[in-house]
Image 1 (cartoon, rainbow, N blue to C red):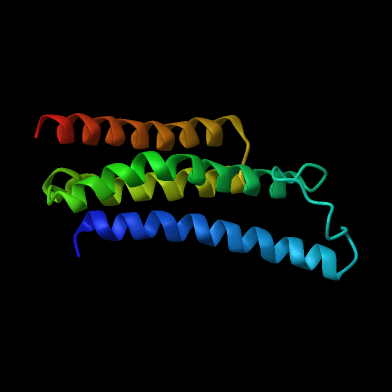
Image 2: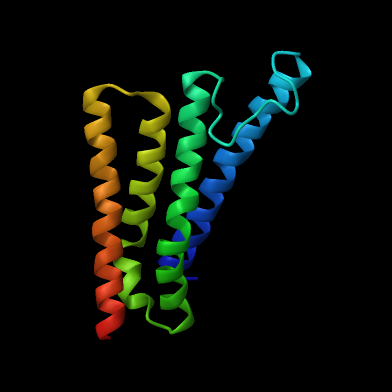
Length: 135
């Protein structure tokens, strides 16, 4: 499998890990009586700031998956992974880094580094889209 294939699986798996983690915590809150089973909103409003950041981090992954996933899938399906492979792991690393920073800190420095990780993903995606269009 190509680096692009592994990065695509990694991206989907990362989004799934964030979802599983959120649901484990929600289940714990229900089982311990700290929250009603029907008391959750998609953004985890009313829960801890960490849980709200976890929901937003997961949503960021879900929002980006169709865009970046489609570019990676297109490269795979058209045998043009030579375009995406060199930056596939950089993209995945930036995605995971953005999520981890989002979960761990809201300091001004952390937010700047989180934005840098986001900007790396945007730059990689823009390059992939342009290169796939002209190849």
